[in-house]
Image (cartoon, rainbow, N blue to C red; front, side, top):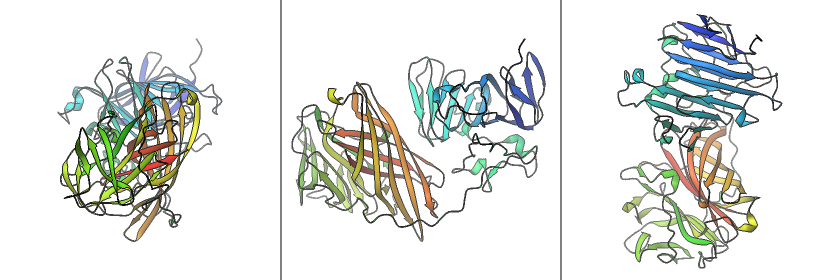
Length: 523
């Protein structure tokens, strides 16, 4: 019988850790080789870490069974590499290696009730059973998943696929249940590292913070260039110390946030064929710190007969009328004004209302400080892919954006937008998008440059709502927000009969609260 290909080895073993190999179970100390077909088991108050030969690091929680079903790696990513692993019980925290980074379909994790597709990422997954409820009685049985780097796709027999980005969480009750997003991380995803705590001074740390308190810490993803050695002793694994911040240079002069960007002479007045009037917004009520979330599809009206816009003072948006009544307004008794925004080509308009009271459809009268805001995009939105655009790819460049604002009662000003672009791949019935926005933050005496990357795809036949996940991280500077990654989400809409424009409403979580905004693009 041919010997199974080695898949990796155990680089940390604390407590009772065993290896099931060809039907025989034996202790698995550090440096134990793990081959395809082997199962690693950890007992209560025990932990283990594996390093696969492609550089992946997999940390096993207490009471876990983890199996390497198949593994093929020849020392470099050449298209033949593949890995199939299974979480049979318990939970793991993983940072993927070379397999799956070039070809996402080559690395999958079977977790009993669902399959995890890898997108070059770091993630936590836990199969919850009666043991979970010993520490948290509110938890239901099933699979819990969270992402701290990259993306994962969760699918099962329901036929639904749930994609999760950084700082996003999901739950699957059983093999036939539709995967569901969770707004907050369940307690079970925070690994208490019980075994390490039994070893004095050997807690897993990053920048001096144990995982219990780490909200912005990420393990280093090993590369295929030999950077695999994280272990400094049999009981301790060093995490990566983040490089010291560099000074952020001031961004380009144009922040894309002054009134009148682009052609501000007219708001949309005509509805081209194949479009409907649309009002896309990022809504926030500071009195209760409430947000309309649902990935920022916060208000969209499809009825072409009942939605209308009223403009004033240089054609800035004054009211939005729905079903004959004002739904959103800054006029009359309402004292807010449009702080920045613009309109382009009579197709799309954008802005932020702040500095007073406004009528906000979902909350009634709302008062905003200058540092807060109601962000919106208005125009004639495309609702299906035109035949001449199918199977084509287009590039869109940023033409205007609102100043991002904090969705908190005591919001502080400081965020700016200074650039961005987006690529849209139009299929037969849907569209996929990926893009980048450049942000700048002043925070007291500190400053930082940031990137917000976003990507997603619309449902077939419904390109009016292209939901995207977002990830924001500091590129340089000494600000404290989003040092590693902040998770977010948003919606992209395409405007004009030939998708001449695109609008993005978004929000992301800095850990201290959400930041919201809107942006307009033109191809």
